[in-house]
Image 1 (cartoon, rainbow, N blue to C red):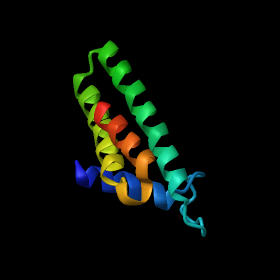
Image 2: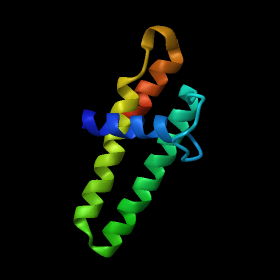
Image 3: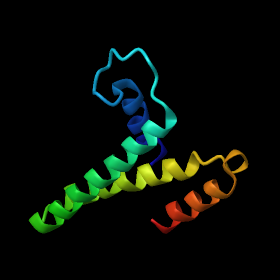
Image 4: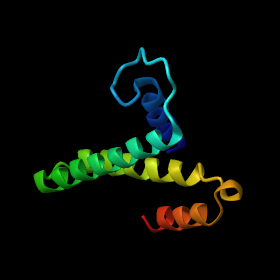
Length: 96
């Protein structure tokens, strides 16, 4: 899962919010988190569609991406710098 998380975040850093690989400014960490949240929703929608279509391989693939994103977000929490907000996010990611 960790390799999949790295692939996702590296791809987001390269593309930026516009999908442009020639982007000169690096993305702000908050932008990356928001893009990852959007990705989770997109992969959940794909998983639901796959379940309805009986496409279990696609369902598994989509849910694996969701899990990889959540694990990566959880692993990137800086509890010392983030204080109570970091703790709340950690609890949220564990719940998901």
